[in-house]
Image 1 (cartoon, rainbow, N blue to C red):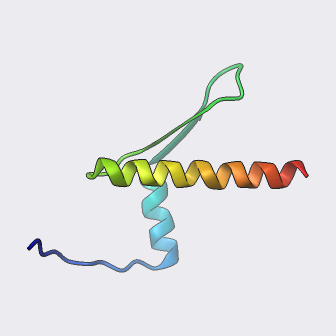
Image 2: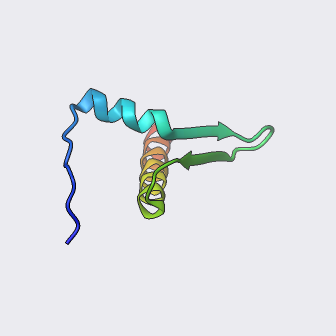
Length: 65
């Protein structure tokens, strides 16, 4: 069984940690945005990127209404 330490962050610390590893870059002359996240676990990195994209899409759809 794998043992480890669970670290609980405040909301501000969690946001700061997320933003430290998150990269969002627009592609020139397009409507495309590249989103990347660095994490030791590739599955976790994919989960974070997918969630960021979901939130962005929802906010964009709401703003368009």
